[in-house]
Length: 347
Image 1 (tube, rainbow, N blue to C red):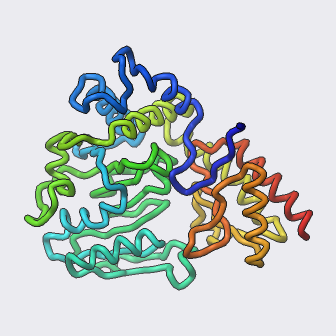
Image 2 (cartoon, one colour):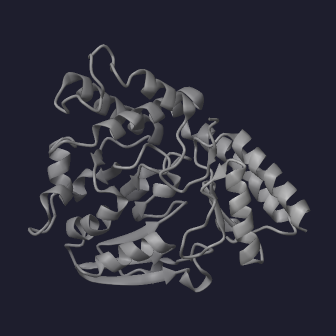
Image 3 (tube, rainbow, N blue to C red):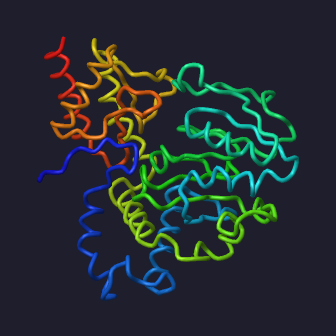
């Protein structure tokens, strides 16, 4: 069976060369006589894998030396609790910018642990824009500012949707984290990049597995980590470096790819994007027609044609094409060709 074009928001498509390499090594990794899924996380083979993954992550993101890189479990959602438990321990206050459903969930979770304020939100327009903020919007004594984003600000950032898709100045943040299943690896891994001076202030009630200092001191090996997912992460990082060389080149590639779809949406009489142009994502492209019936028909026929997982998030409906790093330009070109044909047939 031919591979489909997978536009899922996560777990998402992976580079075919990465899948091929993982397949070739699945029975015998690097002469070890075993799969990465079987080997001890204390073995020399896996020690090399996780250390190489960190080196590549630091190189691509140009991570300063005073930041720790942690490979953790629990996904991005576990960090909704871990962040206030580790960092909201000065004034007990935190300011959140609500940019979407995940930021909303992080905000709700953080409210269990202190004085949490939503300083800005785009909920009034179904999160179709990133709310603008000014310095005076934030409390001077807030322990941190939090945003789930596709572009740069300061404080603590969940960058799951745009991880490794473009350069990011890590030094502007105290903490950057991302779930791997969108752009980096299969589900089961979260990467946290944390400035060292922020470690060591977790509340006494913080579960061991959520205490960033304990995880940092153990070099992400406090317990058995998600070994296979970290291995795939390393292969993806290798792929970015070998195919593109840098995140600047990765961004240029993603801009070219996204432009193909956005240009069509801007010219179409049937389909339209739902996010204001200045805040459009290079990774996630939500769009709709003016008819729920037509939306459903499009999703059904697209799936039958090999363009899968285009149904929008259950909270907003419509369609969403996630065109992460591993989605080839060819996949977007063929999707646009299908959308043009659908529009002509249903005009």
